[in-house]
Length: 528
Image 1 (tube, rainbow, N blue to C red):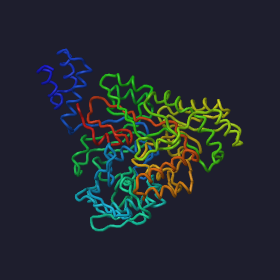
Image 2 (cartoon, one colour):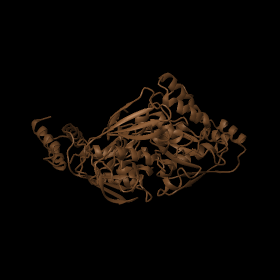
Image 3 (cartoon, rainbow, N blue to C red):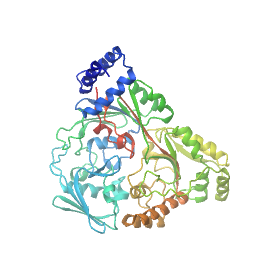
Image 4 (cartoon, rainbow, N blue to C red):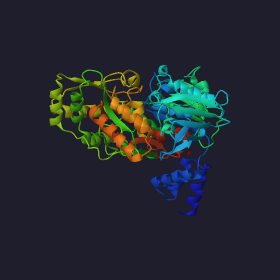
């Protein structure tokens, strides 16, 4: 690297030379465009966060039914704008370690049933009110209310009392729960003034950005909250989220510069998109899984023989190869993979077996087609995946009738409402949270309508088990129950594939969920 190019690189990294001028002068010095772009990205990252600019995102997963009430967040756009405007008590770093947020300290009794959280002082809500421990307690109480419809209701039911002691929130659990702090990092539990009891959809919280415009299913705009307590996040002056549910349109918007960051890049085009000038495709393996879900309490899926027939009738390896194109791995009809602590890799892998599928199908006594609902918003490639499922099931004499549903309203009118549909889960930091959110009998998001007393008792026992070998054994039995008796067909664990252009910097892979576990807009910064 000669001195002149190094000088230009330093100027561009500091922002005193714009990117276009830098690229032009680098080319004149004989430096290839790809090399110059890579060196500039590295230099910008080394400079650290730069303040200012506007981030424009193009996102899949927005609907006209979206609400600003964090309790109701169920798709990607509310998940991301929730983290722009709000904050939880605790966070998780990319390695899965707990980090302080609105709670700066925490400790537990020896039996892991009494937990104390010290609430941070000097935090201001967007309306000018000062955060108190009572606001935190009220938030937890609201999400514990059966009428809240909160996505966190399943994990909150284990808390028997919520009290305030000065600057502390004190939680008592009905049974020991060693993972309770992880549960309080759930993205629904964004802290609101008076817990959101007065107006849960006001959008007033304590995050680095505050609301300016909200057009559900179309566009969302937030601006920097100047009184935010944490200077380590919120580097842009404004965040604009454009809802672009069509994958091709989303890719085009990134390539044209209309947006700087997108989610849900389809595996089939990820390689091609990565070759576009100035575009970076980010692929992160983790706990996310693409699934087909059956309601165990609704005919014909209340027959476990039929459920087993459908589980044997799906070709997982073929689906991973043709849908994920190498950006993922085979699933095993349970929501847990090796990314989780205490995963049991000795559980036998279920494979495609049309003979077994035919055996269980005939034993079920069912006849006629089975409706399977899907949509392009269910997961990237969901429609193609449903068609592959239809083909592999046909070899076992099982007829699937694929019903293609519109994207708008899919998460409110099809998922968790219709008895057999395509869906996805982003996963959770620990097994207890994943199972408590979606498989505990009382969970509000029990989208397979799975009600199993043995499973419930094992889950409660595992929460308080401090012996890790015993705890692993409990989780192993739970996984087998879900795999063999539940309504989940989990053919594949997906990588999260996002993409951004070289106008922004600061990407850090996070295996918890897409877009740096929803943190990309508050952690990245302008490189232009």
